[in-house]
Structures are given as structure tokens and as C-alpha cells.
Length: 191
Image (cartoon, rainbow, N blue to C red; front, side, top):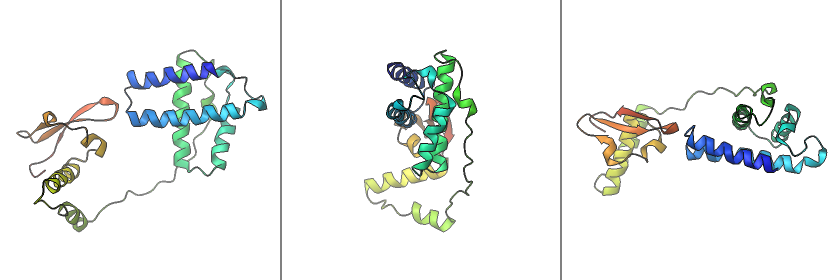
């Protein structure tokens, strides 16, 4: 279990420093992999793995995924956990901590496709006009909604914007997105 713990710590450092993943993504990966580690610990007595990274094979991973499936996880959640395991085992293979990647034998379940939810124009207008612009909080809320509507940026990106990121003259904002990647987004004159 020590080599797994060490590999997990190195992997999370890699995601943060080299891949520059967001804190939320790293937290989701950490939760998934900690759950996997606990599951391995609880199933160690079965003898299917010898407390060694190299002994984790596709049979063990399938048992783990069957366990998740038995607990009623939705396909979308299962796919995220599979993506987490894929990324982790790819990392282990590249670092030569394991001889072969057991995830090459694992197929992700098909997620159901759903149409995106939308709002009618009158609903958008009601929403944008809902803040009380006679108060400072209302003005702030109106500005937040206008920027989100005009730019299409994520809420997480919006909360990271600082005054220095806004160019009023050009009508743009400098947005830091996923992976700490920066882009300039037009916001329009009204926003």
C-alpha cells in the first residue's frame, strides 16, 4: 500500500505542477483514487492483488467497476471514475512503475446523450432585470449576469477576474480558464 500511496502523491503533484489542472479537478481525481485505494485495501484478503502496484490488473479493475455499478452509480459518474483510473495508470506506465496499463482492457459505458437546457428570450430578460440596481449588491449582481450572458465564460472563471483583467476601452476581459490557460474574451459594450 506504501508504493500506491507514494504513486498517488506523485501523481497529484504531477497534475498540479505539470498538467496545471484546477483544484476542483484534482480534488475529484483524489476522491476517485482514494475510494479505489480503500476498495483495494478492503479486498486485499481475496488474494487477487498482492499489495503491489504491478499486481493491479484489468480483472481487479473490473471487480472495482462492478462494485461501483452495484452501488447505483450513473454512467456519467462511472465514466469519470474510469477516466480518472485511465489517467492514473497511463501516468504509472509512463513513469515505468508498472509494466503494462490494465486500463487498455476497460471499455467505458456509453453515456446517454441529452439535449442542453435553454432559456427563452423572455426568461433571460426577466433574469437580467431581476437585480435591484438601486443597491450596490444589485448593481454587482446585474454586472455578473451581464458578463456571464455576454461572454459565455464559466462561473469559476468569472470569480477569478480581477480589475486588472478588464480592458474597458477594448471591451474585453482576460480570463484564466482550465489548466491555467489564459484567453481574451469580448464582453460587449452593454456588459
